[in-house]
Image (cartoon, rainbow, N blue to C red; front, side, top):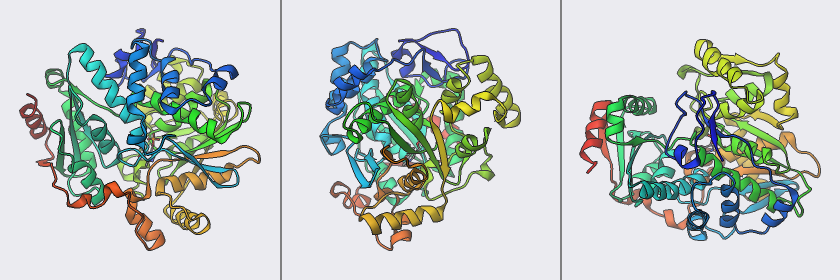
Amino acid sequence: MNYLSTRGHPDRKRFCEILLEGLAPDGGLYLPETYPQVHTATLAKWRDLPYAELAFQILSLYIDDIPAADLKAICAKTYTAEVFGTDEIVPLRELEDGVYIEALSNGPTLAFKDMAMQLLGNLFEYELARRGAELNILGATSGDTGSAAEYAMRGKKGVRVFMTSPDGRMSPFQQAQMFSLQDENIHNIAITGVFDDCQDIVKAVSNDLGFKRKYRIGTVNSINWARLLAQVVYYFAGYFQATASNDKPVSFTVPSGNFGNVCAGHVARMMGLPIRTLVVATNENDVLDEFFRTGIYRVRGAADTHETSSPSMDISKASNFERFVFDLVGRDAGKLRKLFVEDLGLEGRFDLSADPAFKQAAERFGFKSSRSTHADRLATIRDTEKRFATLVDPHTADGLKAAREFLVPGVPMVVLETALPIKFAATIVEALGHEPDRPAKFEGIEALPKRVVKLPADAEAVKAYIAQNCD
Ligand SMILES: *Cc1c(COP(=O)(O)O)cnc(C)c1O
């Protein structure tokens, strides 16, 4: 399998070459040259496989530069009941007639990002050992991504994590999750400033090419193809649990921000998994909903980006969206470049409303979308507790609200549960007047000793800290 860039760079790469990379050299995103096709006979063979073996089968179609036995061992070591809480790994439960919740948030940090990040940690360790190389991951987080990365990389040989976060701005639970890690290769850096300051620091350090090369700086952001690939697996696992045979269609609703999760659903559908509809659920930051309704993609400025009660979906632009648009415009890299480099670069928007391709988003690719507000979230959380005695987190609530707008009799609707309520306790208290249950292993984590350094919002200070901690 070879990978290409959405922006038309002539080079083709193998999986392990793009594993440790971010963007392609021309600024595009990597995609496989073709989507391997999965036919009925294959689906029949996969239906009853344990999750780790299903993951191995799917990953094998995209990874041909890791020996099969090694890849199989990596999958087996990643997807265990010990790490994800159950043998099913992503158990499906029926909420009401025809509406299901697929649990993706029972990993170490209680959000779905563990599903991909845990695999990434094992793939990184494997590939770095093979190359005899080291990697220093530098990131900025306001919550879910940073903790998932730290729990995936803790104790891994050849990898260090330097994670910046805005001092005092994460919830006490999120701070405790990250800062209580005592592993030597994990470095928490609390920056005196806001999340944007942290992102600016990461950009400034990455733009210092000399420093970046000398200290082998890398990232684990959501545009990484391996993360997206890992997420394809749970669409298959959800499909098998929601159906009794492989001729039945299923729809998925996906609480979305950077379009990584739902893009994995798009890939599964392109491979031939019988997915009827992919519902993109957004919050007040409705860049994606606006596109699927109107054909206009308009990125937002900082002043237009709202801080909401589903904060992991608070985005101003959707960094994986370019992958889907590449397929939407018939994989025409020239057209893609016009949209993402010229139109977006010059005007901050592109307009496909009059382009025949736009219709294809719904008709050929099965996309629908919706948007929720804070009031919708609270109402859904209350209603779900009252009628079904089930607690959902604010992101999953955005998904449930959207899902109900697109129900079709006879087609199961699977809502992806992207986090557990305990991570967003303040909103649960606002909706219900009581705290959500806390899994036993997180009892009292706020009282654990914290491992964190405080630095000013200054890239030079962060560089000096990295340099000191790199031998
Ligand atoms: C990251 C995240 C999302 C958004 O996922 P994308 O892949 O960025 O679309 C939604 N919900 C939660 C809880 C998340 O952590």
